[in-house]
Length: 353
Image: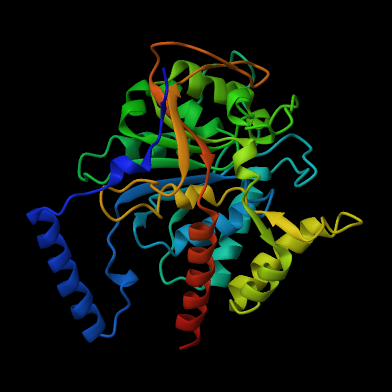
């Protein structure tokens, strides 16, 4: 049994509590304007978001991270730099996690932030099949954050690559599964959700970074999953003309991101055409850009279904009675990219003041 999301259920009738809320917001906005602050500066964290991505690989993660760092409605306890494939064409080194951390520090330096989150290096390769879980500074930090009792702010694990670190933490401390949600950019297309698109049989990139970890998270853990599969994250297209224009006005941050894109695009004779897929940006949409009332991803589409058994080849096998998950079928790209470019521009304005 699955449920298809219906936005009509999100309609509200005018009730006194809502009127009081709106009146209070009006006072807050008036006060903010009078003091010279922007409305965004009045926002307070609604979620804690652990960010885990392969920042030495595809530069889309750098766009996502910069956007997250400028989002006032989330708190970032720490950032994890994770590995990609052994001998991956994007980073063939044996120090991919450390390289990822270095890229994050480079990004934050270009942004000239007054305060920055802690950045930790994960493992540099997937665990061997059948190996016992290994504690590390990253797994300990994940477990400690999930078990915090001094905050009621919900915890989200936002992953844009493999799931090595999260899987290890869940194997060590299964109890933390019910204390967080995973938002994952990864996984193959669901055959019944591609809506006439040609079916692909090749394994998806992020899944193959650590297939065993993905299987642990889907098959053996109790964590709630919001998944953005390949056919959906590939919809996050931006033209290079717009990127050049917008990032050209974003100072050091814009130059850093354009250089990161060019380092990949110019490896190809056709420079990869006129667009780029910023496929990790839904991590921001689904954690920071939520609706005002009853925070949720109300402008993006998804279905709700039992979490399947994930095969070693990345295919899904139906499993009735398992915990429910969301599979996203569409992301609000207008909201995502309009907010991203606006925040980059505002940040540059603030840096130039």
